[in-house]
Image 1 (cartoon, one colour):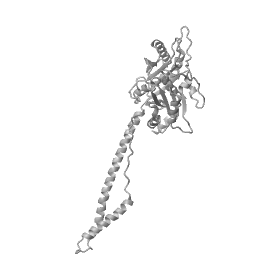
Image 2 (cartoon, rainbow, N blue to C red):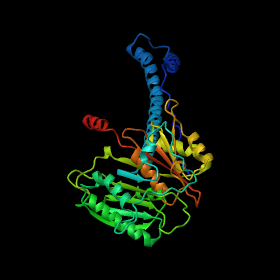
Image 3 (cartoon, one colour):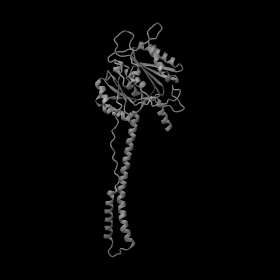
Image 4 (cartoon, rainbow, N blue to C red):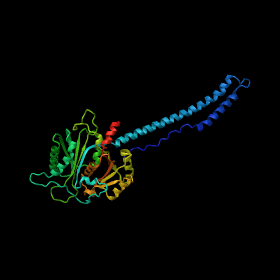
Length: 406
């Protein structure tokens, strides 16, 4: 549903005092004042005295100044009230926009799926078709002394290495939908792969059941977290032979501390202040009501990314009717039409961590300097739709130019 942002009333400013109105008024007031002086002037007194001419000229001027002064005072009072109301509305809108634009800063994102991430980079090319299929990852062959997840986790840690090797400490949160006995081995192998890629970094491991992506983000954007956090979400098949209900995949998202670090101080886990210009952003998500998509998306764009419009639409758990409704609710440039990415169509059956994997895929593939991208998740159990906007990092030359201007 849309955020409860109050609708601002249109403020009418008072019209400026017009000489076309006040010139005839001046003539009427002057004529009335002159007539009053002539009527009240004693008939036995001379009219060629200074007193007579002072009254004859001064009375219209005084009368006009009094009338015009009252009108001007009322106009200025109405103008000040309108400006105060306008400033208060601007202040409220700025507060709401600041609330809507709270975000998580992403230093790096890696997604490992049966479909390579580069497949999503080609705007005009066709994506693989794995709809209604359960696709698996190419795990390392299980041999004596081999680790089951070695190949995938080595690839994951290798991709994260440039972003993690200069940290002091990283809190790793492993979110899983697998049974506890199997995830223990995955957690152990994950920590080993990370320590091999960044031996000087201390990794603090925590493990928990998978949670919905959008509600987790909505909670975290309001928290003050001073630690560097690595979120790893996984959905893997059990070793036992059984019908597979989803495609396998692993997502890793490295989050910078919630608040920018002041110069001269470092957050726990960061060896140097990070440059916010070179981090992607995950903006506050919105729970959606499907019969009000146009108003919801319009509000998201207005409060989070305006004047830019989303360039991509990623969705999972959405049928053809819902995805078409979301597309029609997004205003796009005819010269640069919206790029749709149906994650389930390309990767296969969604699972408990598909939302995280789609988010990591979108973040990993978004080129620097590109426009915002809209992500849509619909939970299979509750049928709740969530919308979320991501913003890729600025181009290096753009951010350097902005700093030099500042």
